[in-house]
Amino acid sequence: MGKVLVLNASYEPLNITSWRRAVILLIKGKAEQVEHNGKLVYDKFPLPTVIRLRHYVRVPYKEIPLTRRNILHRDSHSCQYCGYTGDELTLDHVLPRSRGGEDTWENIVTACVRCNVKKGSRTPKEANMILRRPPHRPHSGLYFEVTKHIKSGVHQEWQKYVIGI
Ligand SMILES: [Zn+2]
Image 1: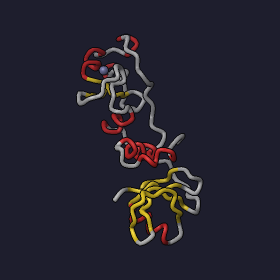
Image 2 (image 1 turned 180 degrees about the horizontal axis):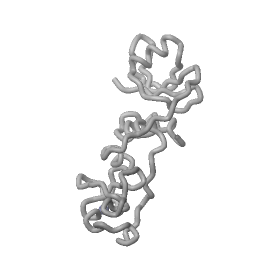
Image 3 (image 1 turned 90 degrees about the horizontal axis):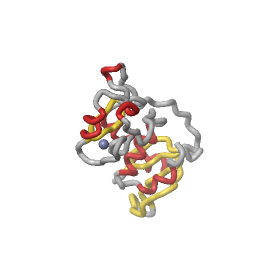
Image 4 (image 1 turned 90 degrees about the vertical axis):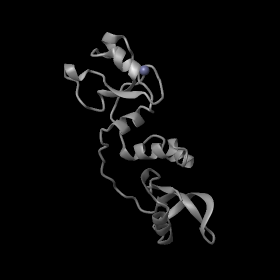
């Protein structure tokens, strides 16, 4: 059984929950069904994949931890210099550590071994290696989680609810 995307009353994605909890919210009348996958949980009760809360909920910003896994995900598991995708991926400090480069979202990118070695302790400009996208801090932890699910191919139907977050 899959996960369910919960939308706020405003139709913005709010969180991801289990199908059981989603069904409880529906039965209690706290949410309405937006999308289902056609499978039945009970008689005439299709399994939800997207639900929407009837009342608006305010959410505080949640910090996304700076981890190797999260940086790879932000960079779509591709070298930010040459576009390589594969197993040989490393993390590269844009401004090298040896020159005061810090561990921040803005200073760490995914790089293949070849590009990492080639760049060495130079800046991209010095090495004449152009970053495909300037690295930035992801703006929403939920967006991160939701895109992971969509990329895994399980919840394609969530795609239309996450544009612009
Ligand atoms: Zn590369």
